[in-house]
Length: 465
View 1 (cartoon, helix red, strand yellow):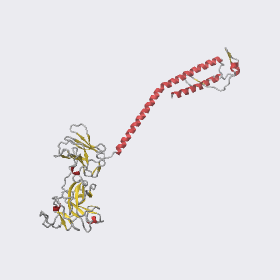
View 2: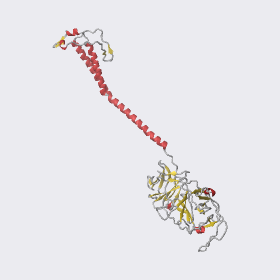
View 3: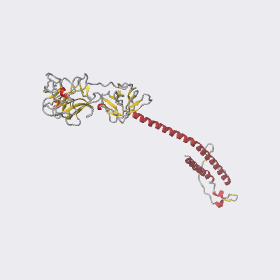
View 4: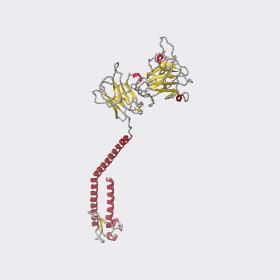
């Protein structure tokens, strides 16, 4: 900037010099030719050009043009040179003053520009900082509350039999991806990771259901959803946090090496403990071999949701007498509304024959079939490893889905029924054959079984349910 200003001043200076010299050179040529200075002759330099214009002269103080006298007194050439020299000195002095002023103002100007630029950058940075926060706040997901329902830090038989049970009090499933559980020891000041968010990746807790976190090596009848290597000890505190790092629930100060129900921070209600749901009646064959159904009975005084039974969900499975694995007949893991009313019945039927489930009033159906010499079971949770709640096998079945000895094989149009809700864990004693199948109703008729080797049989006739 200073260089540009200086060049402008030089240009003004040259223009001003030309304008000052021009009137002095306007004297008639014949008057100048007769003059001479000592040791100097004008004739030697030749004729001078005649310029015809009037230049303004600036007042030094007011810096405004001042008109020249109309008829100036003739000046000697020597006086003219002196006059030019004086004006040049004045111009130089003015140039020096302007340059000095510009140099004096330049640092201040630069500093002001710098301050203004920094302020603009700071303001812009503040605006940029505000925008993401506002956008993130607007887009932040609101997570449903999940509760710490139950904790066990040991059992009478093993210190490793530890678990934490979570409870979902909401009417919708909740995705647990990026949730995490933190622990603080009795004398600790800060919380540290107990169950990392990596372990919750892709997991969900069903509506009004439970989610079980077990110590590594403790399988709790196959009900554990995930495992952690971290132990729990007396005096620990637990905090469950959602992906927003917000506390969903707290469990403060475990004080006893036994099961403790309910979170210290207002945790979920203790999970209900139900009597076993029973397999009450089975039809293997009706008018066709595909007319199959299985009836369940709820002996409890409260409705039982099949997707939320004793901390997990129920699954109906079958096996042939030589099978090495389960085949799912029906899983209720995602059927939040499926329930058996208190003291009531629930019916599954095969849909291999179109319209058959509707004809028997089935509550649910799949295309699976059961057949002779099969065994079926209600499992808690997964195939093969889930705890068996109830099981029955018939005919020549002798596999894992069996209690005691198998029941008798039924024929077409018959069913096997449980007698008076008896559950002795022996299918041969608990089930008999009925000539009148009663889906979703009390069991009625039965055929007297033959006497077995021990002489046990049911001799009384009557109605059974």
